[in-house]
Image (tube, rainbow, N blue to C red; front, side, top):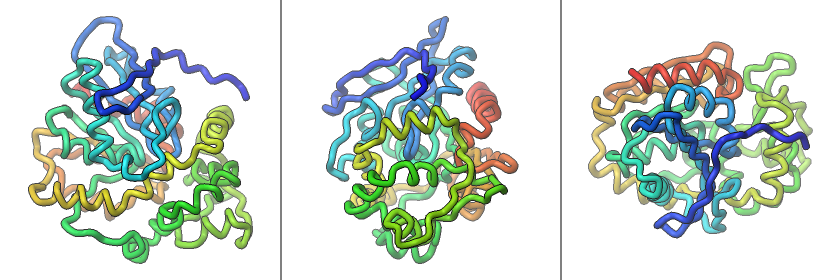
Length: 326
């Protein structure tokens, strides 16, 4: 496997929550209070920000990019209950305490975006601005809705039902190359078109071999990144998949938030950026988000898929810096 250039300062520290986190902590040349906290999604690591840390650092920001819980050099608890947004918010706040950082602009992609959307509710005093990539903010629901009901109403959640089951772990690990090729495919590709694994039963059937093996679209990331993720995640998918297995405990937390939630106030500026070919970036969800966030800017990237951090890295970095410095 070719070595990947990742020249940023990295640390591994045990937090006051008892968890050990591995993270990038790249200091600016001149000390200041401008800090970006970058939260990756599934199935990624802090490496996913490797093309952004440089521009952010060059613009004078301190850049903190953890391997999220379950990934890379960070702890990998086996219990799904450790992966709820509230518990991870406690970890992130403890990380900022360790680094003596009061407030940050959070930039988050995919599952990191969902965590960030709850971090601003659990720890509003820690967030100056919020950037969500690909995944829209959703309000905390007032009651528990089983994942099967959600998938029936929103077919793109069908594969969540499969990943929610502990039995999916060995199947994913045994077919990791195909699984990652499906996850990291370029959803904007037209030759061949991307494979729709989202509906219920499709992904499970493909991995079990009971459905015809698809020809995934070209990768949205480079081959060296793909090889890195494949090596890093080999036999280590329990942690990453646990995010999909938090529906019930997450709901209990959300009901606590919902009791007082009235929307994201104008005092917290929010930027959302997504690709118009991303099956995860639902226009309906983005429209609904506008009613929940008082100070929201929405940017659609033409002919881009889910992995906009790779497909449009320069554009994303520019948008983030413009927003953060405004």
